[in-house]
Amino acid sequence: MQYTGSEYIGEYVHGRMEGKAEYILPTETRYVGDMKDGMFHGKGTLYFPNGSQYDAVWDKGLATKGTYTFSDGLQYKPKNWHYCDRYDRKFYTEICHGLKPEGISQLTNMDPPRKIPEGCYDCGDGFYNPTTRIIKDYRNRFLRNADDDEHEWIVRTCRKSSDEIIGQEPRL
Image 1 (cartoon, helix red, strand yellow):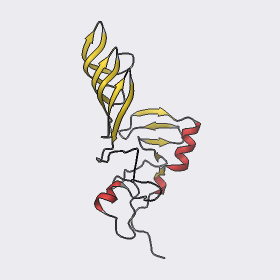
Image 2: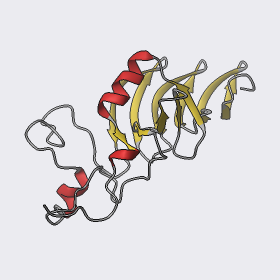
Image 3: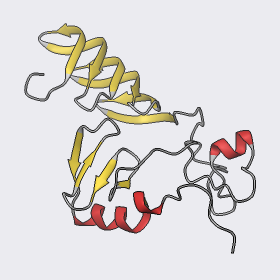
Image 4: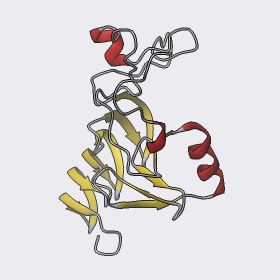
């Protein structure tokens, strides 16, 4: 664990992680569930720092069946998914609490949206600085360096700090 930065709290069998356990990754993602031969195996849940979770049945480290629940309680359904599809572009909070009055836009599912540092993009798991090409989580801790493909995708699709409207827009 000292080499990976992870933490393991649980049982061992013949020196291998096995039985009921909690495995904490350096990103603060936690796995709570069954382990066998050092791998996720059986029922277990991944808890992500953003509050979402993935409940699954694992087989030798691979999820064979599972359910993803977003931090706001919305549960992903692979069939008949009616959230933010091509027909209905409302955010889940808008579905639950209604639309904002005319002239007040909701830019993200989080209301109010996160403040984005100047010159950066909100890429979903943190903020991306296109100058340094570094993605840091929302607590300003290093996550990863963006490769060319991720850089291009973020710049093309993600919300940038300068895109935010401060105060009311004047009526023309």
